[in-house]
Length: 246
Image (tube, rainbow, N blue to C red):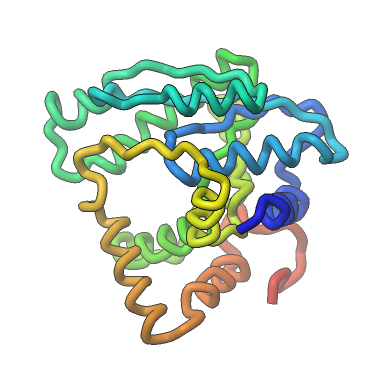
């Protein structure tokens, strides 16, 4: 995927869901993975021509895993002239040494989000951008159906009452395969995931399940995504229309 296509899809999401307002100061959550770094490129590119002026601040919550090297991320942020802050934590130690969690993902996500939100507040940001893409939305919907018995997925834009922050997901129209292609094409400096649970989670199980469903039923993931868009899930409304994306 070319940068122009990435920017087009990003702007579509930003405009459709009113994600960015004049004067916004956006903390971009950077894990070092392909999704968050692609998000950084997308918002940096959008910032140059978008009619509403906004600022970016890249933020990484370091979980404390030994050998996690952010040198290339620092270099990228310097090249893009985006300020970069790393928040040191012991989340990894808490999960795998102190609590010894057998299913650590939910608690890890909660702790990471808490640390990222607090950093955003400390830096004077009013919004936080996550690198969730189209496949993440469908994966989350399937996880909710299978393990919670409800039709749900996270919304494109969420206001957090406790902090006053607004969470946005500008990559919601971008396929994961296109993100992989973008990273390969532009030599994005993706960091290796240091988490011991990587590849052994419920989300990974659902990804493989959807891969098999897509093989047997081409286009099923796209139809599931449309079902989420049209499913009248709380937080997914932009007008009173019955179906905005049919």
